Image (cartoon, rainbow over all chains, first blue to last red; front, side):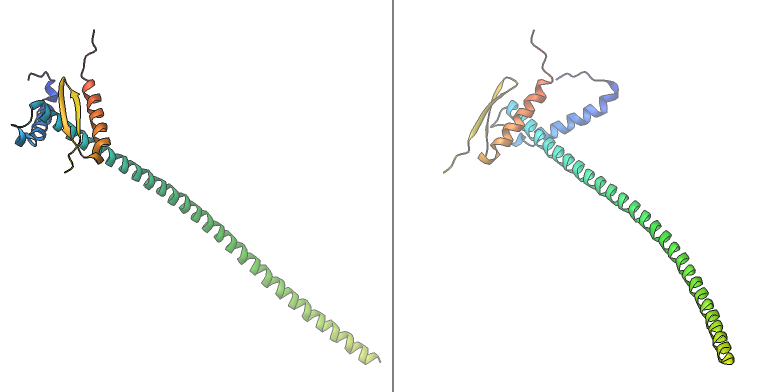
Length: 132
Length: 47
């Protein structure tokens, strides 16, 4: 069989012919019982079967890749949400500290006022006692 | 004794008979269809 080819494709063509010969040779043990065309047909059919298996594997890999990408996106979104929530917690803790400080100062002021009130009350009582 | 069914098909002008298992019939027909399609890519349109 004569076949034209491009020089750059020579190596590939020889490799493919070699593979085809090997594929055909798998059926050569029956060479006396079956015709050449049937051997080629069986070899081609087996090649189609292999192709179908490879296509199914590729399809499976594509699905797995898509699932993996989806999971990565979910993890990324959850990570962003965690960072945002941590920021919010940090701000709330900072607010809480400020309020605690204000509470402490307010309590201190109340105590001071109570002390003053006590002193004033004592003075009033003392004045009343002395006056009566 | 059960005999395997035989599929008769024509590829590149030759009649081919192939025995198959009943469970594989659908797969065999699908593969032959794919093979025919592949061969048809090399057929010149008839004038």
